Length: 235
Image 1 (tube, rainbow, N blue to C red):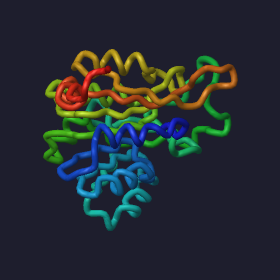
Image 2 (cartoon, rainbow, N blue to C red; image 1 turned 90 degrees about the vertical axis):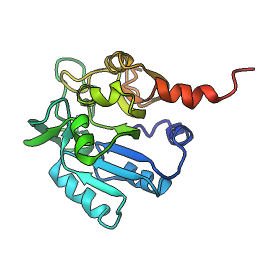
Image 3 (tube, rainbow, N blue to C red; image 1 turned 90 degrees about the horizontal axis):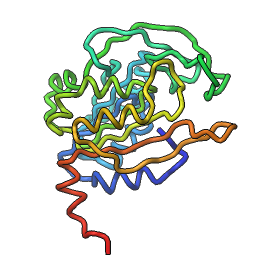
Image 4 (cartoon, rainbow, N blue to C red; image 1 turned 180 degrees about the vertical axis):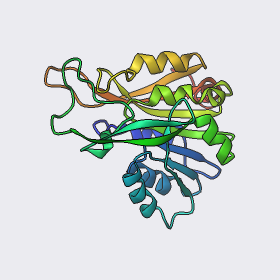
C-alpha cells in the first residue's frame, strides 16, 4: 500500500476503531507487514490474510504461526473459482495475475522484471466468505496489483448486502499492468452497490509529473448512515 501519505492509518483506525468482534480481510498480504499492524491494533479481531504467491505464502505462515487470530489462505482472490496464471516479478510485491503494461510509457522501475509464471488457484470473496463462515467484514484491504476489480466482481453478494463496511484499496491512475483497471473503473463499479468514496491517499509521481497510483477508502451507504452521518454537521 501507499507509504507516501501516512495519514491512511489514522483514518482507518478512526473509521474502524479497535475493539472486539472485528473481521478483517487482508488480500495481497505478501509477507504480512500490514497484517501485523492489524494484529497489533486489533488484538481481538479475526484476520484472514490472503496471498497467492506460494513462496511468499510460506513466509507469511511462518510469521504468524503463533498468532491464533490470523488465518492464512494461499489463493488469488478473483472473479471465479478455478486457476489462473500468476506473474512472479523480481520485486515480489509487484507480482500479479496481470502481466506488466508494455503498450505505452513505462511508469514502473526497469529493475522489476518477470522472473517466471506459475499457476495459482483463484477464489471469489463470496466463496471465501462462505467457506470461512463470514457474514460481515468490517475492513477489506486490497493490495493486489490490478486484481481489485476482479475481486469486487467476485464479491457481488457481499456488496449487494453491504456486508463489507470499509474497503481500503490500492488504485492505479495510469496503467502499470495490461488490462488492469484504473481508479474510475473501481469507483464506478462500487457505485452500483451504493459504496462511496471516503478518502484518497496519493502515492508516487512519474518523472513527467504524472500521479502513478495511490490508495482509496470506500464505505457502504449503511456504514455512512450509521457512523459518518452521526457526526455533527459542519458549523
